[in-house]
Amino acid sequence: MVRFLVIGFFAALCAVGMAQRLAGLGEAGTPHAATATTPAAPGPDSASITPGEASIAKSADGHFWADAEVDGHPVHFLIDTGATEVALTQDDARTLGIDPGSLNYNGTVVTAAGPARAARVKLGVISVGRAEVADVEAIVIDHGLQTSLLGMTYLGRLTKFEATQNAMDLKS
Image 1 (cartoon, rainbow, N blue to C red):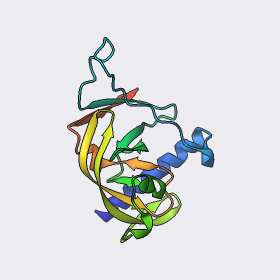
Image 2: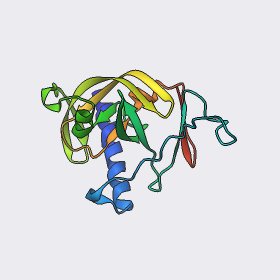
Image 3: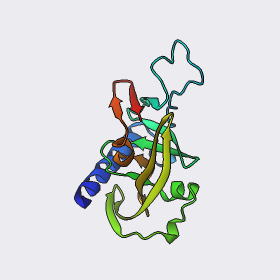
């Protein structure tokens, strides 16, 4: 399990680093998320979006970026089907009211910056648009993670997730 976690994080972080370099962003920042489509009232363009669903447009860098809500707080995620777990940066953990200094970093992952320690946490509810999952296992990485990753501890609990050429559709 740990080997798969390490391999998944390394692959995800390499992909993030390459995408940032290709997009010319480097250390200056990350792309903004495509907002999940969650229409307030049914209309001709909202027929395919129903309660429990979200559609994320593919970003110009070829990735799917989601502005999610975690326990009522906004978190910017890279959707990463190769990440075993939801992984939080220390800054995002703080946003959620988690004190990174008080965590037990008893796991190890490999990031683009090299090995890093990881601490397990449990999140109450993650919502991307209307696609909501409760009681999500996650880890907080002590260093080396540029952006939080929305991995399989969220995605794998959805009824369905599907990537097309232009969007990723989520259904809880």
